[in-house]
Image 1 (spheres, rainbow, N blue to C red):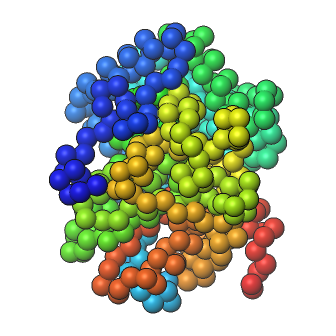
Image 2 (image 1 turned 45 degrees about the horizontal axis):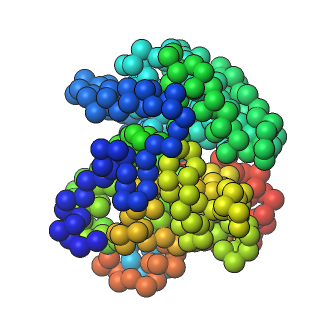
Length: 400
Ligand SMILES: *Cc1c(COP(=O)(O)O)cnc(C)c1O
């Protein structure tokens, strides 16, 4: 994208298209609900945003710090590395920025019941949290397989008062849970609000979730400005793409490289990865056209990543579009490299990252070496590692 194009960046169009991606591929019965949502969302007044910002400040704990990782930067021997500390948010990741926004919207619309679906359980926990805060009944759909694998998050959701419904159809994972959530929404559309956890789903969700997450990048711009610095590169891990879109968006019209890090799992040449941009094809999932992992028959393929939050076969349509235009770039990092990233930033900075964020760490460790000491890399530390301790214990030997 040239500078002039970037200056006029305005996506999506009125129909929710980001270039050839996005749109609304949903049952006809949901169209009125999406139109209602678009109408309300586009006409939110200043009092809504004031309320949203006050919860981000007093409940979530924003602004999150921008921290210069000096030991790591020195060790890597290249650019200066700055960490945007989304791991310090209430509930330990960026996801809460979005669920706070959507539940406030649900209240404005007079909805009285919340539906969500979750894979790893992180979005389910962030949704159950805000439902407790606002006293709303909450039903979370989760594949039966995931219920088994993520028992601690299931317990958290229940402790917060949510109902977790295991889904036993299909592969018993996220995409089946999504189908069930949409089925529930079709049936209960009059009183229920569907909280989607990333920049995915039918229009207006990708744009709306981006707008609830862009506070990350906006704070970074201000925090860099206070230090008289500019970012040469912004790096974030990508599952559905919400933490990446949140930090990228305010930089789209700047002279800054934007790099998304996908999960390469056991390698992009194996069948076990989650690299939707690098290895996917255009297709429809969750009500939108985007890049998507597919089998030779065009069926959605199962993704693999050691990190549950990146284990998703699709990616938000705006990322697919930014990749199309060349405005952003995507790379992929393996399970093994991510685990090395965990050790690196734990030992050098005293910060134990989430497995998802560790993918971005692993890439930044390489990227920094190719850059000059007067250059700046901004890394979105999307979450903390507490939830991943069992995995770390299994794969990382103490003293290694
Ligand atoms: C869920 C999650 C992700 C992936 O989701 P995005 O929508 O791609 O941001 C990344 N990091 C953490 C810590 C998560 O919990």
